[in-house]
Length: 247
Image (cartoon, rainbow, N blue to C red; front, side):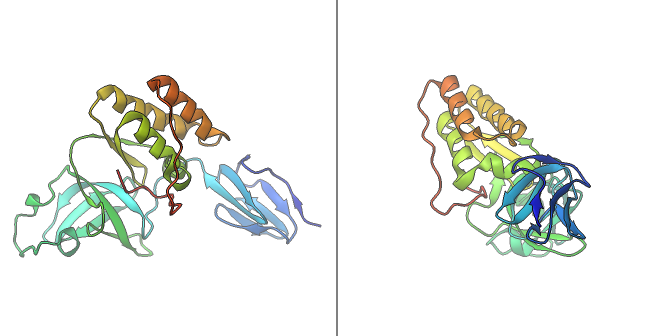
């Protein structure tokens, strides 16, 4: 007889038996061993019907095709740019994918992106060796100017963005800041008022810290209303996306 040995949103550690029997199915962060489903990483358990998965509490970003990320130019090559994407791996931006403008061979590539520049870009290919190609062709993809960059735990990004973008929309509404959250755990924010920029950053770090708690949306809403003195409306995007790309 199958039996669930854990609870939804419980913290699991590697080797912990999460369920017994063949009625449950292992997903990300778990594996089947005989009739048991066992935790492979330390993280937060999600029980979705008969499917059990774990969201890791730590770990560096692993590139994935389709992700929108924030990256920094670290090297200018003959054929493009090498980017640091806050991962153990680097990404390549080719001349072909850098601009809609035709770029001649031998052109001064620093005219487009120089060392130290940050860009918001999209991953278009990842090989089995994690060789990663990105593109600047697409809505919202561009060089980032001004603002501040800071990092968060890449596993907490979906919680920071919120369901349908609800969480980050609340912060934008309350602070008036422009905010971009890369799937790789880098956040760019820019605002007219330094105090509001600081409030936005503190709120994002609070969500990162408390990502495992239930009722977090209400807690963030209450915090922002207290700090700003304004009523905050929780909004979700109609497409239900959990990826952030718009300001």
